[in-house]
Image (tube, rainbow, N blue to C red; front, side):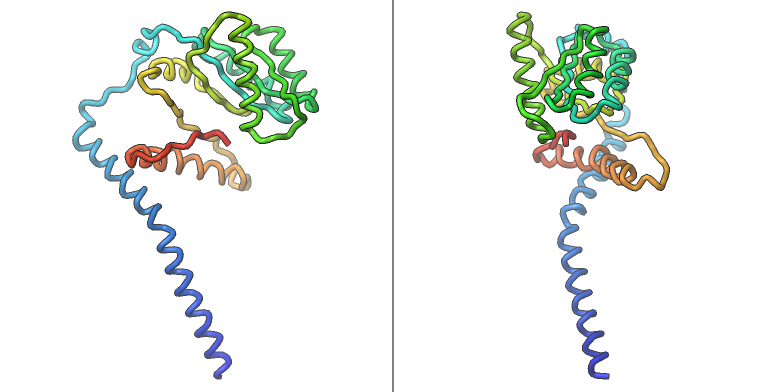
Length: 234
């Protein structure tokens, strides 16, 4: 009986310790929830009648700034061509270019981008000096260097930088919306909502929950708290 009691007591103490740890670690999440829902209540009570959705006429009234869409791509040969074609064919914006970062040892992805580039002159390919895969920041930095070379060679200056992934489906008015907000707002982050999949796709489901939590609640609360707002880049 003493052995059984000691085992029970040990598990009870361990359980209490874990509860205390989880409560303490969840206080920051509780703060985010309180800030977010307080903001929602305030907006509903005091700002709802004064807020008006942005209209298509307002978006079209702003002259188009020269934008560059940056896409890092490692082993994306299966999706990159479709992503580029979908973007070019659906986005309601003309004054932009797409720069895709590829790697010397990823000829398939580079080949797919080159095919689109032959048809659409607003697509450019940047090849990193080192073989992949590297981290996304490294690829983006080399693409940025390629953009600077392009600006010098063509005597142009991109006013807005936009980041996308190779599998992103871009809303047709997303560039118009960014164009409408800049430069009054120096950093614009559009909500990312993954397309809903079957319940058995556990990895996709995890990302859906994460993006819904981050883009619907966490980023807004962090903005109110004047904390650093992270980009969705991974």
